Image (cartoon, rainbow, N blue to C red):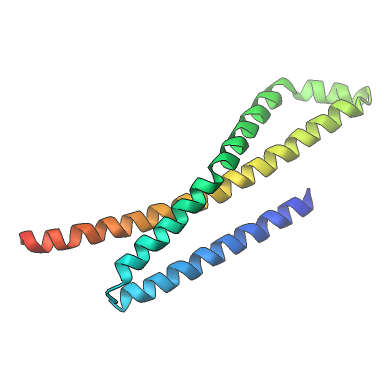
Length: 140
């Protein structure tokens, strides 16, 4: 499990680094008031949306896995787990551990998808503000 945590940390670090790099580049164009800034933001937003769409089935499956784990966790009370340990019912204990690992992997998938959605929301917010900007200036 430690290896999975290390992999999650690395995947999250890479994802955040890539997002930071892309948004830093976009911010430099915006701050430089380049005429292409809005188009670059829209292009970046489309790229993020495609990535979210590509991962939608995987995220949906991960969410289903998380729900299944929640149900099995309710069924496996501390009393039952203690009983399984006492009776050395290793297959049940192993099955529980396997489910817990699948739940962890599913949670990671959902967390990474949430980062993509946060990036999408940030870009949409900036573009919405850009859309509102000229309108406000014209009415003043």
